[in-house]
Amino acid sequence: MEKTLEVLRAVRACEEDAQRGWALDWSLTALRRRVGVLVGQGLLVVADRETRAELSAWEGRPVRWAVRLSAIGHDVIAFARSQPAPARSEPAADARVVELLPSQMVVMQMYIGLFRAGEISVQPAEGLAEQVRDAVHDRGAGRWRLHLTAVQMRSVAYAFWLHQMTGSAAGARRFSRDYGLAYRPDAPAAQTGPEHSNQPR
Image (cartoon, rainbow, N blue to C red):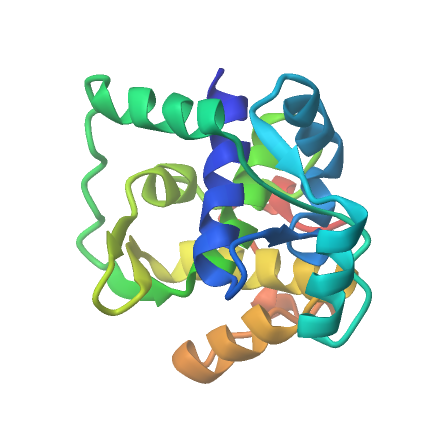
């Protein structure tokens, strides 16, 4: 159920970030298979051909598929919010406030979700998954607020680099501009993870 909620929340974040209210294919590429499962369960609705054509015209590039929460998908998220919240993780003493756009937060949720599914070789830095889970959404600023250590921020940069290599570079560029940190596979100092066993292979 936790994985289902992660996907539903990722779709909702994309909906909030999109001007037309649909989560588009390039925002959820890494979750395509899991999205398909939730469509089959009636938790997500797929855009029809006419809607995809309208979205393509609006975006200025082809939209191959798009989804949004169904009525019961909304209800699942609402019900989850009513459950007792897990104990919030305390930020480390050397953590700093990091603010991410909804589209950047989707990338982080994808990265953590793939790690929990055993599909990621380079593990997130210790405590990053909990910080992503406990992130606070500032509706006024339109940002997600996390408290991250330097090591955790390197993991964030790595996640954005993965997304850059497979989709959009916007998240990585913004993170680099805002926090002066970008992952470079040829630079040992940019390697992610606190342990040697977590280094990219």
